[in-house]
Length: 367
Ligand SMILES: *Cc1c(COP(=O)(O)O)cnc(C)c1O
Image (cartoon, helix red, strand yellow):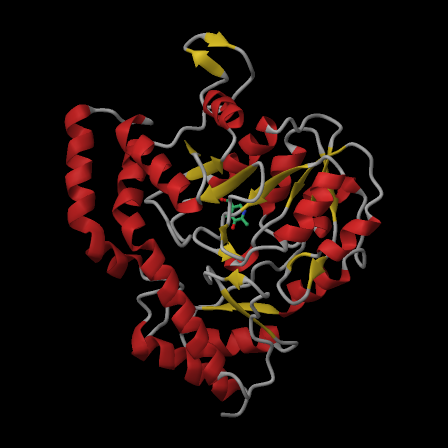
């Protein structure tokens, strides 16, 4: 028996009647882009996050890009972020002609280390873009203090953290805007690409609704140079069918994480830690070991899917060479890139598949 990274088939069984009836409704009305399902989902996600507005867009990457545009990031600005993240956190900055200014991660959480903010030497810092990596929030209190003092807007890359919270406050609700992804593998995933921006700021929400639709409030009258980045009704239909299960699915992931921790307590690996006040939603369960590549090969052999998020930090990517960063600039991010390994974690894993993972990992370390 193989252990996959997730089981969308099992998940679909739970929601398929709901999806089918919503699809029929869309096919009867032919309202394919935005429309009532998207508006309903925007309302649900905003409420879930404890903010006023949700703006459905075409992907998580676009959600980040549009949020940066909406807070005014433009040519020549500086945006502070982490080098240990998915590509599009950083490409969203460079696409606007702005410069990513990396600071190293806290090895405990793999999130941007707020202690390093004191050393930032940059002018024109327009925004700070923390990433809630693996499903756990960055230290938003410290980041918020620094952003206030330096008059920088906060945009949260909450693509991996829908439903996560810190000291009672939801991911996405801390900054001027928060960006979510509905990529199919995410904790709330569509049947294709999709994303959402949440914000409590009415003006920003209005600007975002305009920017996602070619910058036109009124069709063919363009106030700004926007994008074509709208969520479609079929995605919203799938997401609305899944949304009522999200909190329970996230709880289930937390249970599985606890079980992994118990099973691996005596092994020479670093287990994921939750920072004080955080409710981690385990988009990924990421362990660390210096024998990462050997362990991964062993688990591949055993039919256990694993993945490395991420093997190359962004400051060392070929496409970002022009930024002038070098190996050694961010030692914690580079170390993490060499050591992290994500084990299968999904609500439908079940005892049998869970035990296969546990046994295969234990076997590698000699039982
Ligand atoms: C998935 C992800 C994105 C991009 O989302 P898409 O919907 O795939 O465009 C951005 N940042 C992080 C951290 C992600 O995990």
